[in-house]
Length: 485
Length: 108
Image 1 (cartoon, helix red, strand yellow):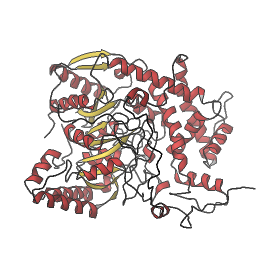
Image 2: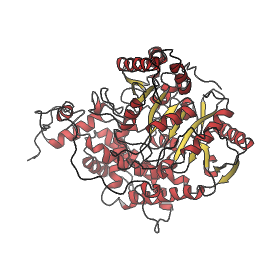
Image 3: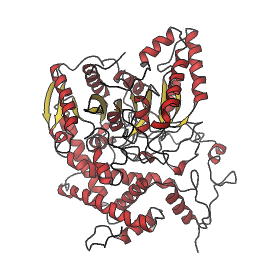
Image 4: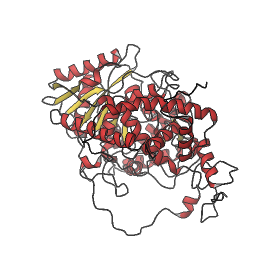
């Protein structure tokens, strides 16, 4: 399998090098900054870098290791953070001009947990504006390019997060997923991307897009690394009223158990028209490998699948229209000059600061919530959401995990879908179902197209059963000949 | 490129203007035209939800109801330190140090 040569160690290898007192944290951080220096003018994964802060942290970790003192779980691991997450000391733009120059006064819980675990935070990653998009072409600061083929998109909205790992600029990154924004770029960039169960990771410090759908999750080169990072950021947070009290297990404990005896569901609706033949070939081949490795492969049906995209675009945009009302030029961000009245200031600041996709979604969301339309659209979508969720709950009575393609095609070319919003929205067809139901998922590389473009398989699991989907994904990775340890 | 407005267009130009007012967006004339086209395309697609009979289905706004493990008790109503005022005001477009300054609220 063609992979961009990263030359970065895995988390496990880095830990071994640190314990052997090889100044590994500083060396690894420098290697990342070298790659960023060499490639990021083209890839454009990063929006802000914290070289000084990162190298200072790395040298502290090396000093701790040199003294033989205990090392925290992610000691020295260089990590990038999607720019919708706030980190005190660095700007947070959410990929938008409306927050250009904004310096947040606090740090997101997920980011703080990484720092407390010894991670070396490299900087902030480019993304679609307010996490709205499937190609990272909606960033107000310029698109991100796919490291495997730079005329193609990395996927979105966490394009920078996926590309940075694929290009060896970071060992892991944090992204966010509302309708597929971790899984789809992971698939396009040939890396592992995790959608934790809703409520698994605190959203405190995440600039909100759709509050009943938003999740924070890791990208990494290997399933084990991704599982390790999730273990650090997951867990209840009193600052997030939707965060779960469900205990956090060791996600790597059973990860090598293999798939013998597991029941894996293959939903017929995800292998119908619209699926690129090369994606079908790669995913089906991977499923066959799992069957040969001892899994029971069961055809299943998720009958309401075709209604997921319209349901998602009503609910997500409705919630976004409420969440983005706070960007009004009053307390932070862009304020349009020369307004004589408050309402003119609101209108002109928002018009001037938001990009076209954000405006489109705010308009759609406002429309579906407005008087006369609320029942027909928003309430209807919430009812269909329950039907979609019930499809999964019923399926998980029969199977332990569900296997699907992550995206209908490999990475498309920049500019290919920008003029047709519906075509862009349909790229989310396999990911929005899990988003609406709150279940967990992983996208794991499972092959490539004839042109060498990565193809990902999506492994979906029950609420809070990340351990099983890591176990399945690990098996996929091993069967692909992936590196681990 | 403007098109003649069809009679039974789901979303009219007036609808777009009304919604833009609700959303506090000062759209340009060409944005309004484009927005009408886009909203109609998307809502035409969304209309397929009407194929489903949901008369006996409870709406689901929050996934938490099927998740369990979410604390039902609210935290104690005890004031704790919030963000330091000076850090918050540092991000303000216009401030006197205590308040956010804005143009006049009453328009008449």
